[in-house]
Length: 159
Image (cartoon, rainbow, N blue to C red):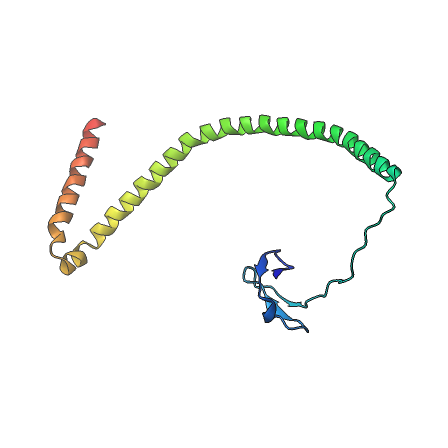
C-alpha cells in the first residue's frame, strides 16, 4: 500500500502486514514527522449503474463547459500580458547581470591577491618551524622568497 506523510506529502510504499488492524504510529523518513495511521476499510458495496440518463443532463453539462471556457479566455489574455511584462523585466535584469560580471572578476582578483599575500606572510612567519620539520623545504622557501623579491623589483622598475 502507498501511504502519504500528512506533513510533507512524501509517499511511501509499505507492506500491508506491517500495519495491524488497530493502526500504529508511523514516522516519515524525509521530515521525521510522526503520526498515527489506521487502515480504513473501503466500502465493499457493489456500485450500480444509473440507467436513467437524459439528454438534458448531457446538454446542460456541455453548456456549463462552454461557459467556463468563455470565462477562462479573458484570464488567459491577462496571463499572457503578465508573461510579456516579466520577459521585459528579465531583459533589463540580464543587462544588469552583464555589468556585474566585470565587477565580479575584479572582486575575485582582489580576493586572490589578498589570499596569496596572506599565504606568503604565513610561510615567512613559520619558515623556521617548517624547515625543522622538513629540511628539504629550505631550498624551496628560499627560491620562493627570491622569486617574490625579483617580482617586487620588476614592478618597482615598471612604475
